Image (cartoon, rainbow, N blue to C red):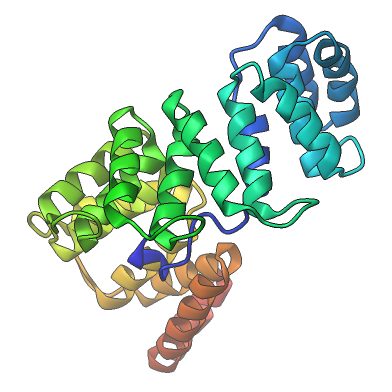
Length: 304
């Protein structure tokens, strides 16, 4: 989570994690890869037709993908029972992505009451097998005290493990923990360094957070040029908070003269692309900007 994003959790909807897993390239045999290509091309029924025979013959990746499809209700009717059935078969073979997905179902309470304690156990099994999303899920539960006692130090340890293994989202979260002093002593220099690692992997939230560190001079010198550079990279990746932050820099003239027309355009982009909190901030800032703009600037901004 990031203060630069209004403390809105990046994990807004647990179900989207299944879509992420389906979008991740499982190191897979050719028939599974062919099914994945069909899924990516918008032909989920074809993908499932390819996966189902493999799943019925015991292929753990196919079983996991079939379970994911039932959990999402894409290509088949949504069915939590069937999702658990296929995922459990793969999990019984020790397949970490399936174990993790069973944890998600338990945490969500899909088709049965929520069971965060069971989710915690499943996430730990997957995490100990090296599954990085499970490490982040464990950190989330420890942070919230969901299914276990609240434990910021345990959350930090799991995020650090995933970050050191190279996960860009974990690196960004680790930067956040160092910046805020959650589960660890505050260290802005460490925060900037972990944001940098995440940003250099092309992770838009990490790019945004690193840009803000440069803008604020947190953990090092103020550098508006680098701040704008990283924020633009995040915005190019569709990250709405970065669009808002760019608008603010142009609005305030940070790093150069004030550019109200540019700021206007970026506020509008943030409103179009943002979540509710980003939209709220951008609308409020845009209203103030409009009140200060000259009529010619308003006309130019609208024309663009």
